[in-house]
Length: 137
View 1 (cartoon, helix red, strand yellow):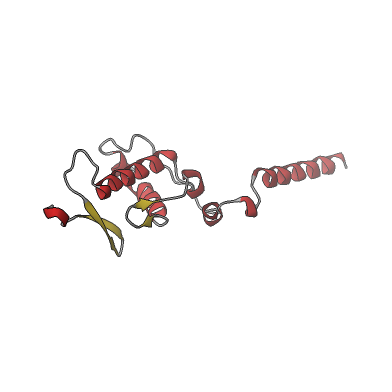
View 2 (tube, rainbow, N blue to C red):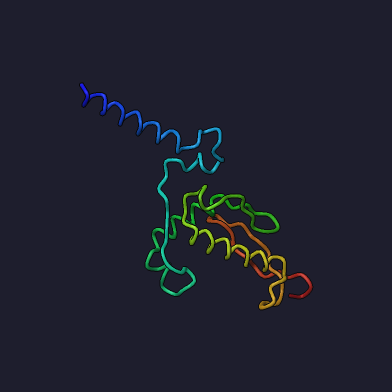
């Protein structure tokens, strides 16, 4: 009898832990609800170093696709999600958002290393940046 009470206590304790550690659905963001059953995607190492992405290409591409799917296009690239919400590692999130910030500087024409301004063109698989032809550039 004591064994059954202990077993029941353990089951209730585990159930309580699971429900108390997971925020209710109405408190989750749109992205957290969207990826609630998805795997966490991570890439290890400094993604700016040559060869690091290639060694983890499958995971990187999945994370890139997951993030790019929610990217907004206008005069610049914008996003309103966090790494945690999309279940990607901070390393991947920081790398990709850094790339997008760089591309936004090209779209604004304020990149000190590259002369001229670029325009954003949507293509079936995402977007590309093209040199602007305004002002003879």
